[in-house]
Image (cartoon, rainbow over all chains, first blue to last red; front, side, top):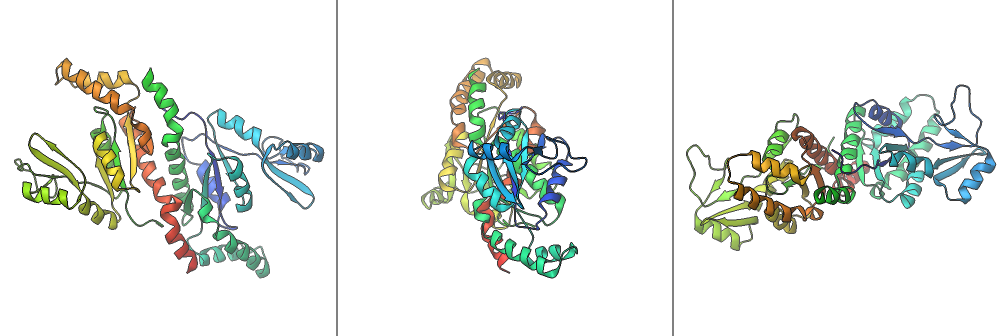
Length: 205
Length: 205
């Protein structure tokens, strides 16, 4: 029996290279959940096989700029001449249906979201130490040492923003981290602020 | 990897007859936990088979009154000439060892505890409706209808104190309720306020 019927917006963030995508995948592979991805909107052209509404919402630049003006993004950014953003209305639709919307996002974007979505749950995923993160970035092996060092420098500054989040989860082992995120989602649903309304209705009947 | 090494004081409360004891038992039967009971202190004599420090801490009335004066109880009450209380120092000892101390307690006692233990986790266990509680009280079958009605009246007033708790958990099915309580414990350990200190130490190394 669920006292809180509305879904949660779960913002999964953390320093560059911590493994947000891997934890998100492990989370979705767990049984019995109502998780959905937040689908981003973009002005770039769809690539082969990409489906509108699944991979991205593909819109024109005019449409995107109009939506920025109308304040219809939780966050947006421009990247090499194309726009990318998180559409607010699509997320609200899913939350109303009772879905937990998972937003996997960089630290900067997450802090933009925080301003607009006061009752979202903000989770900061961290490596089990700086060295672990450095090793992880290096072992990807696809990037020059200089790029690794740039990403590490970015991560160092992001490390200091942990206090702006509700929870800190160590990504020591991906399934442990996913388990903890799932526990957080379940616990947040039971929070008094989220349940008291339906609770009072229930005992009034 | 645990960023918060200290245990949590978990206060499991709720209206009379909701099934606190049953949920607590189911909770302790779950695998992989560090839960311990909070053992009460009493002035009544041990019954056959009761062990000091396990069932209760048995002390003299003089000792108990001295401890009240020294503010060494989280809560205490007198019941038919005997004293019962929750000793603070024993709980602190267990929390320091990283144990989660579960305190299953009536609503009135829980609100006394709240005043002294600001970072404890307060969970309000509720029935899935008033009728469900009435049926449960009646079906115990051991009590006269008048007693059932008295307990129901007590529960009705306790129902209105839910907002003083951190979480509201519906006891629709005992294992569901225990699962939710366990999720709350895991989530609370990841809260930023509890983890930031060790997190900053970790990334400083």
